Each structure stands twice: as C-alpha cells, then as structure tokens.
Image (cartoon, rainbow over all chains, first blue to last red; front, side):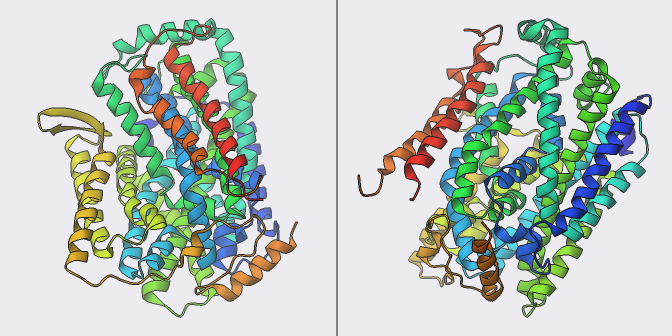
Amino acid sequence: MTLALITEAHGTNTTALVVFVVLFGLVTILGFVAAGWRRAKLDHIDEWGLGGRRFGTVVTWFLLGGDLYTAYTFIAVPALVFGVGAIGFFALPYTIVMYPLVFIVMPRMWSVCRANGYATPADFVRGRYASRELGLLVAFTGLLATMPYIALQLVGMQVVLGALGVSGDWPLVIAFVILAAYTFKSGLRAPALIAIVKDTLIYVTILVAVIYIPSKIGGFGAMFDAAEKALPTHTPKPGTLIPVGADAQIAYATLAFGSALALFLYPHAVTAVLSAKSAQTVRRNTALLPAYTFVLGLIALLGYMAIARGIKPSNPNFAVPDLFLNVFPSWFVGFAFAAIAIGALVPAAVMSIAAANLFTRSIYKAYLRPAASHADEARIAKIVSLLVKVGALVIIVTLPTKYAIELQLLGGVWILQTLPAIVVGLYTRWLHRWALVAGWAVGMVLGTLMAQSQDFAPTYPLDLFGTKINAYTGVFALAANLVVTLVLTVALRAAAVRDGGDETESADFDELAEDAAYPLRGAPAPASQTISATATATP
Amino acid sequence: MKGEPSRWWYALLALPLLGLLYPPLYATRSPELAGVPFFYWYQFAWVLVSAVLTAVVYRVMRRP
C-alpha cells in the first residue's frame, strides 16, 4: 500500500545502485566499529545512550546537524517549495531563530542534567517537580511525538530507493535491520560517527547541485521567473513566489516560531545536547549550526530548480530525486541518493536511542523496577531501541504514508505542550505541578482537535472576537496551555494545595567553566563520577 | 576590565527574531540581487548575520 502510494515507475539504474550500495556498506562497517571509539563499558545508560557525555565541539556539530536536519527534511522541504512555493521556505527562518533560543535555554538544561545525572527531559521534569507522574507525561509525549518521526525517516529512504528502481519493502527492512544492529551494539557513538560521513556527502552533493544545475536552467534569475510563472497554476493548491496577504504571512511567521520552539523539546534533540562535554560546547554549536541552515535553504531552492527544469513527478516527494536523475550522471546520482538514505539513518538512530532512554528512565525505572542497576538500565534501553525501530517499520509498511505525515505534524503540536514544564521549569519552580498537568491536557486535546478539524493542515483559522487569525495550530494550543497553567497555579497556590518538592538546587543550573568537575548528586552518582574522571583525563 | 560583562549583550540575540518574524518587512520581490528576489536573499543573509551575532555574544559572555 505505502510503496504503491509513493513509488513511480523508475527503471533500475545499475551504476547508481552500485555506488549507493558501496557507500551504504561503508557506513554499516563504521556503525559497528563505533562501539570501540573512545572505548568505555557500554553497560551504562550514560555511555550507551549519551556517548559518555563527552563529545567535543566538532562531533557535537556533526551529531546535532545530522540529527536535526533529517532525510525527511531534505525530501519534504523542497517538495513543499516545489508544490506551493514561498510558504515551504518557512524552514529557513525556523532554523535561524531557533539558535538564539537554544543559546539561552539549553546550557541550563545541560548543566542541571549533568549535575543530577538526568538523561532525558522527562528525567529533569520528574526531579524538578519531584513528580513521577509529570515525568511520565513528558516521557509519554516524547515517545508519542518521536515514533512517527522515526517512521518518516523511512519515507526519505523509500523515496530514493524507489527512484533507483528498487521496489518492494525488503530493501527497507534490510536497511533497518542493519541500523538496529549497530545502534544496539554501539549506542549513540554509531550515529555520531556516521553523521560525519553523511554530512560530508550532503555538503558535496548540495555544493555540486547549486553550482551545476543553475547552469543548465539559465541561472538563478531564470529559475525564479519560471517558478513565479508555474506556481499559480499548481493544483490543488496554487502557490506563490512571495507570501502575499496577512493569512499567508501570519502562517509563515507562526510556523517558523512554533517549530523553532518545538524542535529542542524533542527527546532526540535533547539527547544530542546532553552528549556534549560542556555547556559551552552547546553554546559554540549554536553559532556553528547555522551552516546547516544555509544548506537547508539551498536544498529548498532545489524545488524551484525542479520547476525550472520542467520536472513532472507523480508525487512532489520525487521532485528532487527526479531532478537529480535528470541532470546528473549515474554515479553521482548514486552518491547523492546515498547521502539522503544515510541521512535517514542518523536521526532514526538518535531518535530510537532517545525513546529508549525515555522508556527506561521514566517508565521502567520509575514504575516497574526502581531498584534497576545501571547495567539493567542499559540492557533495557538497548532492547527498547530495537522495539521502537520495529514499531516504526511496521507503521510505514502497513499504514499509508499519509498517516505518518499527519502524526508527525501532530507530534510537533504535542511536543510543544511540554514547554511549560521543561523550559519554564529551567527558570522557576513557581508553576504548580497539577497546574502543569492540566495545562498539558488542555493543550494536547485542543491541538489535536484543531488539527483534525483542518484535515491536518498545519494552520488553524481562529476567530478571535471577529478577527480571523490563520496561524500554526501548535502556537494556539501552547497559548491555551500556558493560560490554564498560570491561572491554575495562582488558584492552587491561593488554596494552599500541596505541591511536590524539588530535587534540584539552584546552583545546579549554573554554567561552570569549561573543564570544571561537576558536583554530582542523584541516583547515578558513583558511576557518573568515574565517567567525569575519565572525561577530564582525556584531553 | 574586571567584573561580569553586561547582560545587555543578550539583546543582540533578539535581532534575528525581530528581523524574521514579521514577514511584511521582507515579503517583496524587489530589490533583487543578481536575479534573486528580496524575500529569498534577505533570509539567506540572516543566516550569516545571526551566526555572527551568536558568536559575538558567545565571545563576550564566555567565562574565562
């Protein structure tokens, strides 16, 4: 069903396929070798699930870049630009305004997690509000939002396999079995190492594409002219080269802002942040990661290049693969497609590790076996990472792709509902834990209903006292969530309803000097101390 | 120069938000730059500007 939906007739391209398979094989070897990289005993969740919390600036840059700018993005963003034009470009302001926010917020997150041995955002929330229930809600939301996201990575892989003329579900199954095997063995070290290869392939591909393709379509000026002419004729929804009118512009701005707020609440983003060796490593990366944003902008323009080149794909997702097949020699097509497929492996691995950490800490350890040792935790996390990937594979093979895309859109709306507990919680403990639970519930229900009523379009036309505002659904749901949380906090405090404690201390949030030994408290203290000892010993 | 750098430096980080989250500011075709509409090159320019601003704030606020 799924493949029938998105596969179009492509002949088998032998040269491209050989290059593709060779590169994929190389990466597979790297994934297994990664287990021995900066060797440590992988039977601790900090080692398996966070790479020992000691990645430096460069590795963190590759890992975060490979993790956030996913294969699906590389297919979907130009597909959107190809279809509707300007609105698809919101990915650019989104991934620009995100970094100033991360610069302010994430070093606090890193510091408090380091000081208390937290491995996930849900760990932090549980500790901060001394509430297993609130931790569980955040973990549940993270799992819910992450599963369809992993599934969508497979769509990226499916598209390039389809374009290479490979049909059937089995290549996808093989790729995922390989991925599952080395993630199980090497943990976060595997995607960190593979990200370096993947990003090199991506950068080369895009550099070649933006220099070579314009020469075949008469330059950038001719490209924009062609897009301006073609976009208004597109069905079912005509596009524009520039967003005109209040509706389009409010949608553009709120999609950018809401998505920017959401991305670093995702468990896989936090996992990559926590694997950095210092809060300053995270800060430095916010100045360096825009390099990926620049590339993403160029990738978005590939949508217009496909229009100018007269590409007529059966499905917009094939706009870029078909463009490459049209203009590049076979061997380079293999190279470029390998870049996209490997690009799916990195986020899929990090997401499954993040989901595994969430389950292990917030469900297994918190509810099922509080006495679990570090080795137990690592063992459970490894097994869960396998289950999560099987789940994603089942979703994509059995359900139409449409559902995975809709679920991923909802995932963004859902994950935003954890903002009050996580981000506000990093600054103040004033919010009442039951108010947070109520606000979360209101935001989740309202956001889901709004999205459903619009047939899963990302925006909702809200009638606010006679003024119609067409904005990103997630922003409305978050606003409702915040209002409920604030009002109820005031009410519950006035009524003197008992709130939980707080296992963090204010000094935990302070950013220490780069190589300072962090004071460690909380459950995993002894093991973490050995880790920090080895971390300071390594140059 | 002893003492903490002023926290006002963080205000630089608000500039990308101001520059990008109000699209009427830049949703136009002209002025074009080498055939690229203003809407597009303006946003590409912000990628570089925001990276530089972040780097400046990082440098100034970094603990020794």
